[in-house]
Image: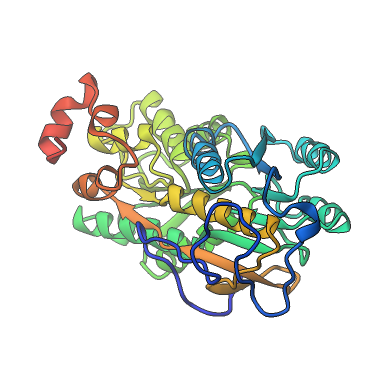
Length: 373
């Protein structure tokens, strides 16, 4: 993924549509030059919008992306309907779900692909039926996209690796004392390759050795746990840090180390600020995560979907190139590193979680210590 213009949106900042404030579901909003609203279809009124998410092993999709998206669509267009499906980590299933939605007459597809290459077929099928596709969170390798909305994914990897390297240095771990395991994301996820690329730019220049790395199929924690368990035997006593691409594989890495009796645990990274990940940070099992403001991401996707049903085409903040070289109008948000010291000022302050959700009985003492009240 190549970004042609660097202009990102800060966490918590409101998105502004270039066509102005969207009022309800009317046809009369301005469009970018050359666009022509489809008044024959009744614009956004009663439109069906398809939302396709990639897997069930990542907690954020059901707990955040889906409800935020649905709520924003409802707010902008009370008569619009969201058709939802989760691929459960199966590219073929996702294609079938998309075909079903196209048959049902959706006006827009918001697609977070399980496999960014395979999903190009979905984008092509949608284009053949004049249905625009918004590539959500993960980039689809297709020129047939209307928009891409995500985060600066190389920055995510840089944040994770920087936090890990700085922690090792602060703990007095010299580069020659051991090395790092890299538990990467799914090989079918374009974002995962960007996380890895960003992480390598930091780790490779740090002097710390990468002992081994693994691309976790489908982001499945069980596969990550099995792999880490094997590395603990191979590199006994040498593992000083674990780069884990998200909280799911981070938690799996921690589980493998606890099962093997590793104590103290080395610092472990994460991503998505899952509730379990935040609580592991409080307990000291996980060192950090990356908070991505999922509400503005999902809401922006909903706004774009409503725009497209009304024939409006707001200009992106940046253009992002697919692997095939196509320029896609895009919106990228800024990720934020979270450690125990910044939980209160990030996920709590933004209302991502309430104090009650985080500070259950098992974590109350840790919350008090961290100043989360």
